[in-house]
Every structure is written in structure tokens, then in C-alpha cells.
Image 1 (cartoon, rainbow, N blue to C red):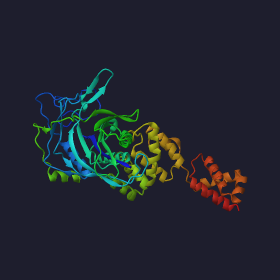
Image 2: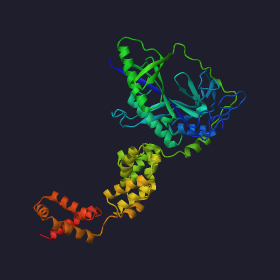
Image 3: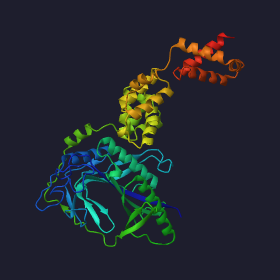
Image 4: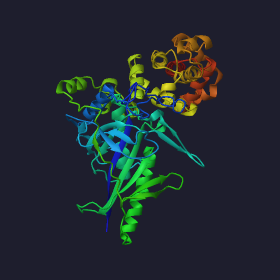
Length: 483
């Protein structure tokens, strides 16, 4: 019997705000442990929370980007549980009246994690709600340390419908969701900093069966790769168990990246009762249609629309458009280069090959690039104007990357300007011909490949500065005259 998986995701992403969700502490990553805290986020008795308007606005933005219905009125609720990472012993969250319902994220016909093509379709969303993040626990050999700097940071929870069927689809969904959140300026989604985390719910059933199987939850996955690997393992584990006649237990499992396996954390026989009730210190919120319209009017260009525009406006290939728009930072960088030079297609090649390669080798991100967009635009302009050959340009770029100097400054310092004077190149062509009579005879005898040797001689005589196309033409002209 053939089986299929039924997968739903719960994605948590921290929002970009200056302060925390219910207090004035800075919403910044890092810092000395327990220094970005106050009586409110530490849950001292008698303190009162205040709603962060910007966090609500970013939640509405996220909902609009994903086609959600922005509902109202909404309210915050206390989710009660006792764990060291939550100083109040409850978390301010949303239960039955979230800000956003419905919506979805489109999976495009691009390759998934394993390289297999995906069927384009829409993955539905159940809801988006806003809550506060918890502290961070670090488990040491004989104790656990807690850092409350993260406690109280605005956290958006995005819950999908059980629409995903494969690990590849889950990976593609997360990639598309991350891109949408980044483009909207809602979140940086930096998983290394814990700013985007994911829980997975997965069950298996005979293909074609409508009823769901018993689901298993995999908690606290901190990379898309971990989501993909854990799902592949868990789906295989569940299918093998069902085929062996074993019942799947509803349980929470963890993921061990080292062993490549999930493991039992706790069973669900005694499901925890969070005893939700409305937060008594916060009034319900009414999000007006006028405010939603104002937010919608300010949304940035969506990734799909930007890809299509790059193809039409700048003439780049579909593939390059996908690469360039993978992240908003790379799309913004390319567009700045393209607007500052006369050849956007050439600019795309330099961004996706030379620059990307140099950054990868140096272990730097695009934001850390020593070559700003304006500087790369200047280099591409020099190539387009035939001031630099492709080979020269690579030499200049390497120096730009190493020193952060401008292309023009390096060209002037090293005297790298390309020779484009036809008279000067013609003289070099004559010298090359006179020095290589045997090769000349081969060319005149029909061996066109031998012409490249003469081109190389011209480039050698010019110390690499002659325009290669003009060198070829000069050689052909000189060889034609000698017949």
C-alpha cells in the first residue's frame, strides 16, 4: 500500500521593531545576558503592559502579504504555563481572536531542497497571531542558564493548514514565506539568531484516504535543512511502523541533527491545559478598515512581481531574476548597480558570479561587501565603455574587493586602461605577423584556429591592454592586405 504524509507547520518569526512587545526595552539581538530587561518583561508584580503599535502594524503587513483576512476586534490572552523561560509563568498571546485568518503562500514550479521540481500550488494558512517571545535557555553540564533579553520580543506565529505533503514542499514553503516576510520588511528571519523557528506536525495515511493519521509534533527546528531532514526521517519512520502493524503515538519529538533522527520528548496522554483567558490589563483592539488600507498602500513590491519586472525592464534571464531576487538585499543591490550603469545584463552577471563568488570565498554576506553597489556600477560602466577588458576588469575587481578603492582609482594607479586606438593596435598586429611567419602561413592555408595565437601575441605585446575584438579585426585586415 502506498502512503502519503500530511504536514502542517507552525512558524515563529520575530518582528522588526525598536522595542519589545509590551515594554520599552530594546528589541536587539545579543547583548550581555539579562541586560535588556525591565520589570514588565521580567513579570514583576503590579506592572502593566502596553501594546506595541508597530508590532501590530507589522502583523497586519504580514497578513496582507499572504492574503489573509485582517479580523477585528482582536484581543490578547494569557497562556498559562510554568517553565523557566517565561518569567511571568504565562505568555501574552492570542487565542480565539487573532489578528489575521486564512490566506496562503504560493509554491512556484522551482526545485525543492532535493532538486525535484514541485507542482505549483497554494498552501493555505489557518491564522497569524501576535505574542511575546520567551527567554533563552542554555543547558550546561550541571545546570541551565536563562537569558531574558529575548523575553517579550514581538513574535508572529504563522500556522498553516495541513496542506503540505512532502519534505520538499515544506522547505519550499518556508523559503517562500521567509522571502515574503523579508520583502515586506516584517522580519529579518535570521534563523541563526533564532529570529525564525519552526515546529512541524506530521502524520501518514494511505494515499487517497480522507481521514488523517495520528500526528506527531517535532519541536524547535532552527533551520530549513533541519525541517527537511527531520520530515524525511519521521515520514519514513511512521510509514515503516504502520506497515509493521504498529500504532503511531501522539507525541512531541525532538530532532538530533548529529544522528539524523527524531527522539521522544513527551507523550500527549495528558495534554497540557494552558487555561487561556483574556488579558485583563489590555483592552481589545479594533483594527479599522482605513488603517488596513493605509498599510496596504505602503506595501513594497512583492518578490514575484519584482522577478517579472527584472526580466522585462533589465533584460535578465528568468534564472538570473530568481537568483537576484532570492533575498530583498540582493535585489536592492542589483537594482542599484543596474540603475548606475548602461548594461544591466552585464551587471547581473557580475553580481551573481564575480561578487557572489568573492563573498562566498571570504565568508561575507552581501551586507558586508567591501564593494558597494555604486562602485560595482562604475566598474561595469568601464567595461561597457571598452575602457577595461573582461580580464582587466577581474583584476580591478579583485583589488576593489581587497582595498575598497574605486575602479577608476585602481585603473589610474595601475595604468590598466584598455588600448582602443585602431592605429596603435594595427601596429601591434603587424609586429605579431612579422614575428610569426609560420603561423601566418597556417592561417592563410585555412587554419582559422591559428589566428588565436596571433591574437595572443598582440595581447602580449600590449601587456594585456589591447581590446581583443579590435586585435582580431586588425589581424584580419593586415593578413588580407598581404595576399
